[in-house]
Length: 232
Image (tube, rainbow, N blue to C red; front, side, top):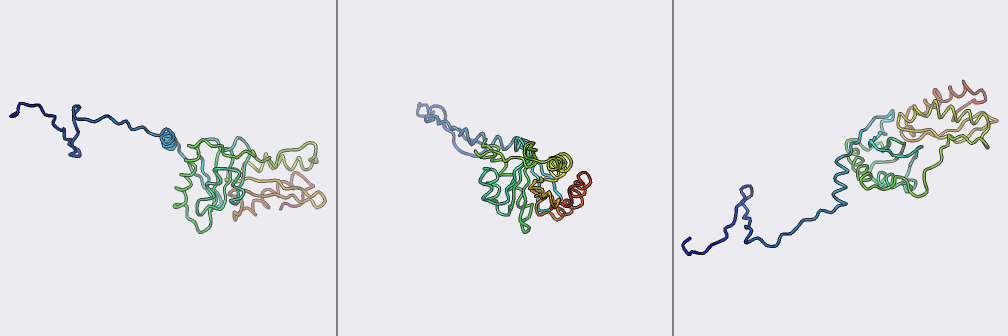
């Protein structure tokens, strides 16, 4: 060099043209620390794959997260007040266009308003489910899971009621749950022979639910249990 003095020359980054100081001119190295919680959330979302399945109800769709939803039984949330029992249900009910949420052991059924469109709604539901599972929160609050209406109470259920519950649980419920819903036993009028049931999930408000009650459930119960005359 003409002056006889050494200089520290900058190194030019070819990709961006920015000058990178050499070791002699480089200031104290700053370490970028990634936030563990945010990093874990991104990784959990990347490794989760959610499948969807149609139901007989065009306004209801099954979401299968590939992870356990409930340990046992089902839960139905038809409004925002009921959804307070579950952090996930609460988040889903806050999505514009969602009118109902249903949980089973392996899937979540989301029911939409008639005016809402699935192409718009599905990505929002995917995001809420993935964020929830990445958070590690319990799916049901402290009050615990609701009792199964089809569980037999040997002390209080009559023989006829036990037979009704057993048939519903063994022969009817699997098909209903396969369609993204469930069936709830509400009572039996022994004098009139009327069985009272409630359809949940995708079966609630489904155009074919009345056909399911009359042609399927009512015919089967009347065939095996002569005391049953009607299902409502």
